[in-house]
Length: 108
Image (cartoon, rainbow, N blue to C red; front, side, top):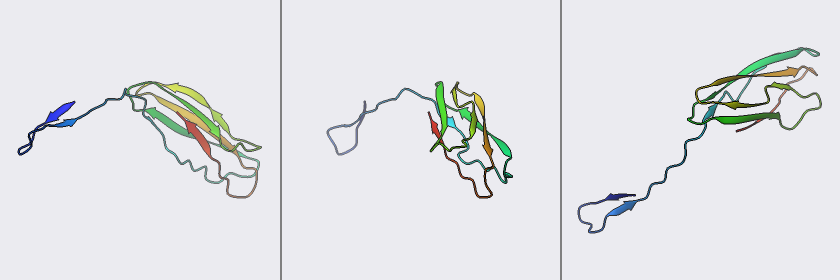
């Protein structure tokens, strides 16, 4: 608690402070552009995860909602220490001549 005294007031202002334990701060690029994928072909892109926090963290990735063909995520679950980088590969197959949109849920 910090007491703040001001002119004209006989009572100090009490500023109550609370500190939280530092945690992981996991950063990554939220959008990935796979560009053009030919039907029947696969394309792999890499996402870099970095922990800019002071504590180790855990990351889990999954396709949401799951697709019948799915996408390959390697690694799908991993621990990441402070100042550590982890490269995650995501592979998608071109299953039709259309715009392919997939959502990957990232849980930390």
